[in-house]
Length: 275
Image (tube, rainbow, N blue to C red):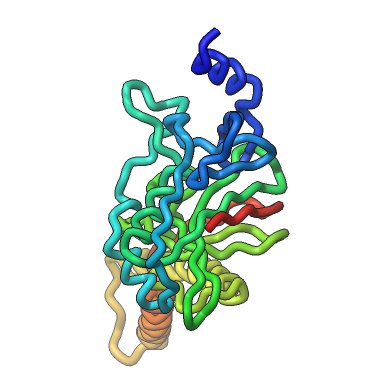
């Protein structure tokens, strides 16, 4: 039996060894320093080839703003997410591949980068993102996974015009994993993420109530004529003023939190970081 056939047979025996990436195969007689090893197996991407982290000896840590500028320029998030089960004639490309690509692009650009594997409390396939040690704000997690089960939008009853899938990730053991678009991630702390999510829920509730009241107002004035200086007219005018004031509040909230958010994922059980 040739070496390649032996490798394939062993691969099938440990196919699910690492849950956060979905696939792994045995390391063989030596370890490639560019591969990711866990429990004697090497992590692979959607195409079943090893994830390969290419580090640059000249890469350095950068500031938060410099990091976000690089992520905005990098187009990894625009690559199509291709599930293994639905790939057809296409080559599967999953979250581990996105994290590998961002890592290698960042290192090539002189920015030190890490790769993070995430397992969920509820089990199943985990997730993969990137990590950077910034010079001003410390550890920052970045998720550039394209549109997929890992990047789902909640539009709050507004049209969705989002077309960047670059996100700052908020990751703490025992807490729900969440992400924010780069322009809304004013702070990398998990407390900031919780505050943002609370504001988003308040916005959604106020928006629903406002839309219902506008609909009722329009129904109440449709086809009617009101006498000048009548109590009925004053009541209608007062309702209109209140609606306009609420509209301004909603506009201010939209300016702060945006018109879309990314839905949170699972509760983080553990993580493994590779630099």
